[in-house]
Length: 261
Image (cartoon, rainbow, N blue to C red; front, side, top):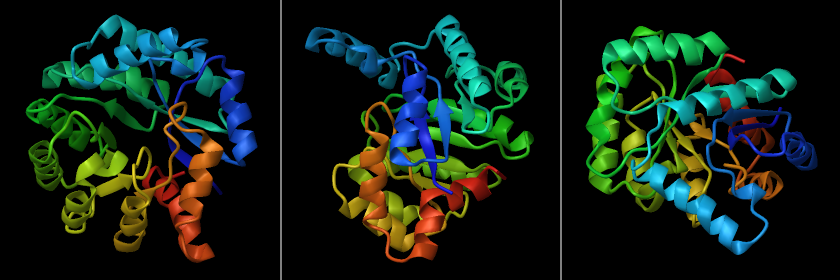
């Protein structure tokens, strides 16, 4: 079974399943989005959508109302195709432990979602994730999916991995496998069995190729759609995997085991 372990809600809704069918992807782990570059009809509209994205990644925008609306949008998408789509729900950064617990109960577990993410934080702000790790540990190791490309630096990733070491019962999925710091990320993740590497948004095929080689049971195929075409992403990663048994792990087996599918 091929499982896209990370894609965002796309508009219009039918575009999601059409892309999956074209790529021969059986299931997709779907994440919320308040940004929709796939709807842009010209360059100016695309720039406007991406400006919102960069604001989110830098932590300049953290609106609760928009996140709740995006969760409802995700809930609707999953309900329309429950045999094909699974959900990961968003959460504002900076909540207290009590607020985090209430949010997770209502918006993550209450909607039948499988984890929390995508979590995007700015440089020097990884410490804000500590209470979330604590709550996730208390909730039977709820998986956390953290964006680890721009704007994070190497020191931020080391701090994030330190949290994963402290809360070893919490699966940490490092989105985009550390970006330009992919080599150090692979090296450090080897000693942390609760750390998984997402293979999307890579800028060199050397990065996923070595991640697959070093951590075959902890790498996760994903497209990060709409930022990457699912069929193209699938072809890229399949081309890096030697052997059918390993391909089965990378392309769906690992995420299926992690989420108990």
